[in-house]
Figure (cartoon, rainbow, N blue to C red):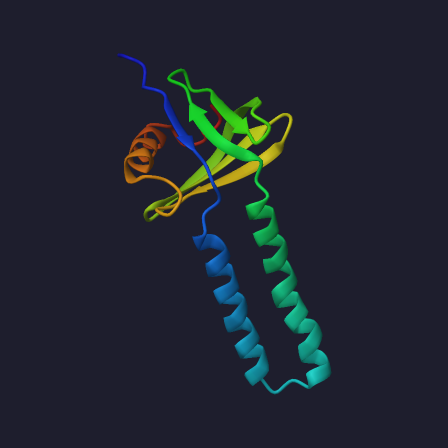
Length: 143
C-alpha cells in the first residue's frame, strides 16, 4: 500500500467564528434584557455574556499559525508568523458539516486550534483532509 500524499495549506483565522459568537452574545443580551430581573443583576450577567466572547475572539485572531502541513508519514508541521516551523501532533479533530476543527499540540506553542471553513480554505483541501482523517482509527488522533 502506498503512503498517503502530504497535505499542506495556508491558514488564516475564519471570519465566520467571531460573527457567530457575537450573534449568540446579542441573543443572550436580548434574552437578558427581556427577562424580569432587576437592572443591577442584569448588568453583571450581561458582562458574563460579553467578556468570554471578547476573549475567544481575541484568541482566535491572535493565532501565530500561518500554514500547516500533514506529511505522508503522519507528522504535522506548523509554519508560524515569524517564518519558523514547529512540529506538532494531532490531538483531536471534528468534522462539522463543511468545516473541520483541528486541535494540534506543538511543544513550543502548546495547543493550537485551527478552524478550516469555506471562508478561509478551499473545498479541495478540506475534502482531502476529511478523507485522510476518516482513515484514522478511533483514538488514533495523535500522528
